[in-house]
Every structure is written in C-alpha cells, then in structure tokens.
Length: 469
Image 1 (cartoon, rainbow, N blue to C red):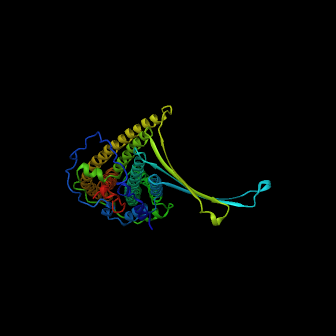
Image 2 (spheres, rainbow, N blue to C red):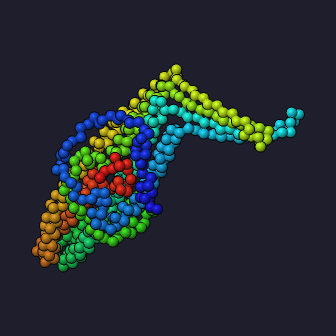
Image 3 (tube, rainbow, N blue to C red):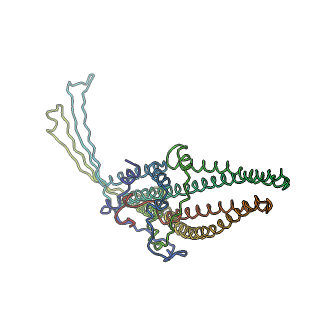
C-alpha cells in the first residue's frame, strides 16, 4: 500500500462519528473582514484542475518526482505518524464515556503454625463510571476530535507544500540545465572567434587586442559552467531528499534536456471565501481553535461537582465447588466538589482561555497569509507572462544582431568589439528568456499552490460537512 493510500485511510472522520455524543463548541468568529473580490483578478471558476496541477506542466519527469514525493517523503511520514497519535488520543478520550470494569481472582493457603490445611479461593469484579454532569468528558472528546481533524488538515497542507517545492525545484533544475547548454554552445562559438582573431592577428589584419578580448570572453563564459554544474547538482540532490532517496539518480535524469514547461495561465479563480475553505492550513488552524475552545469547557468543569458511580461483586470459599454458593455485592455513588486548591483550577481556566486567544490569532494569521499568497502569486503570474513576451522580441533582435556581427567580423567589415558586444547581448538575452520562462512556470505553481492545489478531499477523506468540492 502506498503512503498516499495509507494517509487517506488514516484521515479523520471524527466529527461525523462523535457529533451525537459531543456538545457543540461555541467558537469565536474571525475579527478580520474577508474581501468579497480579489484585487488582482476577477472571481470566476478556476479554468484548470488544481488538485493535480503538476499534470498541466506536461513534464513526465516532474510528474514522476511529485508522485514519488507524495509516496516517500519522510516529512509526510512523520506527519502521518502524528495523525495516528491523534487518532489514538481520540479513542482514549471517548473511552471516558464508558464504565471501567476490572476483575480479580486469588487463592490463599496458610503455612506455618497457623496452617489449616485448606486453601481459600476468591473471585471479584469492580466497576466504576463517571457521570458527565457538566461536560468535562464531552468537551475533552470535542477537543480530541478537533485535534484529529487538525492533524489531518496539517498532513494535507504538508503535501500541498512539498508538491509545490518539488515542482518548483524541478523547474529550476530544467532552467539550470538549459543555461548550462547555452553556456556550452556559446563557448563553442567563442572558441571559433578566438581562432579567427588569432589568424587575423597573425595575418597582420588586427592587433593583439582582439585576441586578448576573445580570450577574456571565452574564459568568462567557461567560468560559468562549473558554477552551473554545481547549482544543478545541489538542486537535484535537494529533490532527491524530498522524494526520500539518496542523491544520484535524479541528477542523472536531468542530463536528458527538455525545455522549461510553459503552463497555461489561470484565467481566474473563485471568490476569497471559497478559496480559503480549500486551503488546508486555514482549516487546520480553524480546527485548532475549536480544540482550544473546547479545552476551556474542560477546565471550567473542574470547578463543578463530579458524580461517580461504582460497585463490586465478589465471592470466596474453601473449595472451588462452593465458590458461587455465597455472592456478595455492593453499589455506591459519590459526589465530589472542589473546595480549595490555591487557585490551581482557576489558573487552568485562565491558561485555556489564553490558549484559545492564541489559536484565534493563529487562525486569523493563516487567513491573512493565504490571502497574501494568492494576491502576490497572481501578480507574479501576470508579470512573468509579460516578461516572456518582451524577452521573445529581445532574443530575436539579439540573435539577428549576433549573426550580422559574426559574419561582418569574419569578412573584416567590423572590429572585434562590435562582435563581442553583440554576442554578450545574445547570451544575456537567451538567459533572460530562460529565466522569464522559468519564472512563469514557477508563478503558475505558486498560484495553484496558494489556491489550495496539491491535495484533494478524494485522497484525504474528510467529514461530509468539511469537504471542499
């Protein structure tokens, strides 16, 4: 079973299973106003499926790496384990609804001067049950249910972030590999230029200055190649860690050159309130608030009376055959009320209330952070697309200029400085175009990630009332 399926099976159904037994928790409303519309985009239906947005990049290696990260990332494994801890803690909390039963049995035979030669046998059972008069157990269960839901959303959010990190790193690696190819092809041209400059200098057509300028240009380009190789290795190795495997294979995969993926731009997206409900980090923070609010009820119940019912049944005899001849039983109840504890219980209430205030602020912060992510990513997508269009024209002009300068220099119609300038402009234009394309692809990833892409409720089963359609 893949980790994706394991995580899906582990996702909480707490609110559905415990709704009938758990009191409603009155959580506070957010103190920030959710905007009706976006500042940088017209609200409308998302034009692409963002749950698995990496498929829109049409890069088989990127898809392979993302799916490997979902299945094998060790941060996700840790988060899945924490989810199982929350599940076990919910089982513990719900167990308080039920009576506690225990049994004991024994045999006794006297030795020494007081021995009777007989063995006595005993059998008994005890039961106790705490009645939830003022909601201590119910609020504790509500808190555990919310903690389980928060852990589930945290796992989904971690997948959202890791998918985005793998996609962005793969785009960067594609860009670096292309820059490396550009540097190597440019170096080949510059070596030809150096040979031409040396030949013309030997023929007395140009001074040694042309040769030295050609050497300088070639050396500067050659110096960029080791740096690019180092950056490519570091990026590929980081991807290896994200997908849970040692370095090596991923770096080899980038030796097959492919262009930087150019996805379609998102034409628009849903209204802010709808998008926020798709963000698992916001939902996790909201569940944390529910849990913290429920803990206030748990703390307050400590000030109120507690009722416990109990009983026992037992029998004893000097022989196994008569063990059940005489059975005794008792039932009892007790009420407890806190009188004085030096302010400990009140301090617990104050602590729970402060925790709820912190959780409220955390929820509000997650809302603001999500809105910031989306607005900034929308601008980045638009400006990156504009840069691609502008750089296309610049690259075309720089390529024509370099061709003309090279042919004119070979024919002796222009000096080497003109050729040097034209080729430097071409190299810069090619790299700027590649950078713009990578930025456009990365902006697409950041925007779809900001909109809540990278996970789906189908992979992470959630309570019906909490599904994001």
